[in-house]
Every structure is written in structure tokens, then in C-alpha cells.
Image (tube, rainbow, N blue to C red):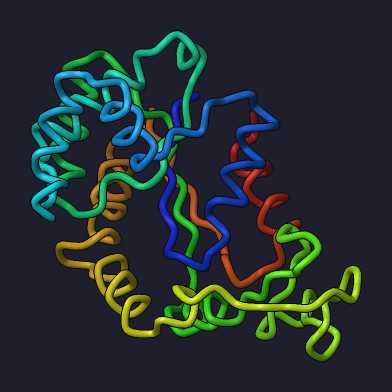
Length: 226
């Protein structure tokens, strides 16, 4: 089972990806981690990517996609994989689709978590971290995990927020790329959605991201039906 995952920051994509990873024993492949692994390992592709990163430039697709393919061909991916964080635009989707086909790697399922942009932003800006355990869920904009005043709802510990979670300009910029239906990340998702309409071997799944984590997880498992 080879899965491609889409969802804006704040949609719970990482949480749902972790659930799929555990339930189906699939490696959760994140594009950022692939860059770090190649650069740290001193691979030829990693060296090429580093020259662009060091200059503050985007790594070209003809370097990024071969890196991703190498990772998807690794031994731990023989029984399937979950790819997250790539493609980020329609052109990358087209190039990735072509590269997967040429490499004999079949994409089985594409998952898109749908979430209103304003809700996604509020979820990010509403996240609060517990001093005792960062995994204690607290969010001032989600009723189910709303803190007890300014204290952790789980243990009563002091709460704080990450500075990048409060950077509205940066959030809007990331979301601007994601929600762009013409050339951005949603355009990439829709490329596969349109392909699935004419390809019975490709399944396109949409999930309602405004639901609770257990509800989204249950819907995802039901639609995967594996």
C-alpha cells in the first residue's frame, strides 16, 4: 500500500500519518527528513542539494525527486510507504507521477485532509505547550482540548506557545502556497484527484479535518478499508 498524504499545516496530517504508520506498519517518509539524511550521509544528491540550500535557494526537482525515489526503493518500503510533504505544487506532482511510473513504483492511495483556511490558522496559533509534557494536547481554539484557563488541561502545568506558531505572516505564507488551487499544493492534490477519476487502480480519499482526531482516524481507516 503506497500512500501520498496532503493536508495544510494545522490539519492534523502528521497525527493521522502516525496512526496509519502504526496500524499498517508503513514507513512515514517526510521530504524534509530525506534532505537531512542525504546531506548528513554525504550522498552525491545530498551534496548537490546542499549547494542550493546554503545559498538559500530551492532545491531543483531533478535533485529532489531522485532523492525521494531512492528512499522509496529502500528495503523498509518494500511492503508500502506513506509519503508526506511532497509534491508542493502541480508541476512537482506531474514530475513525481512520471518518475514513479518509470521506476515501477505504483501509487495506490492519495489522502487529502480538507480544512477551512481560517480554522487551520487558528489551530496553529491556538496550540499551547505544557511545561511538564509537550504531548499533552492543549489548544485554545479546540473545545475538546481547550486548556483549563492558562493551565494544562491534563496536569495543570504552566503553558507556553512556540514563537513560530504565533507568526501570522509566516503561517499565511505557508497556507498561501498550500491553498493555491491553480499551481500550489492543492493543485498537486487535484492533479491526482483528476487522475483517479480515470484510473480505477488509484484511490483518492478526502477527510473532513474539522472533526476530532479519533473521528478523522476512524474515517481514514474506514476509507482505506484494508
